[in-house]
Length: 100
Image (cartoon, rainbow, N blue to C red; front, side, top):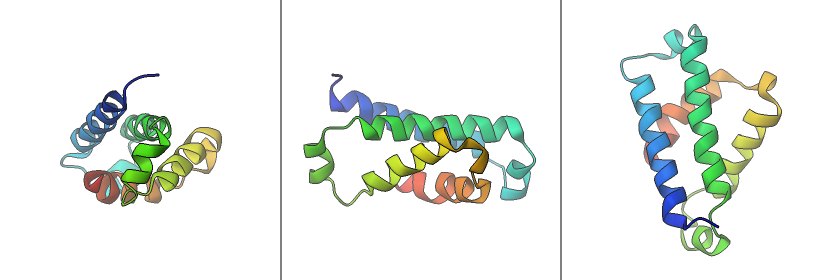
């Protein structure tokens, strides 16, 4: 198993990428940009996959972060791709990712 610091680095790196991908872009623009949507969603999946692999003890110590919600979002993004609500992705990417 990888050390938790590497999973945390994966999360931070993916969050930074999301910020870069969305710099200067508003919600209406991303709704029309399939390439940017795919890039943002892929980085969110990376973040969520890394979060799912963090040790339970770490998550319990940092319970201020909604780890189960992060993992649940990943499950929707991966297993129900055609049901992805891009407005939720936008809110997640622009409001929740920066807080994480």
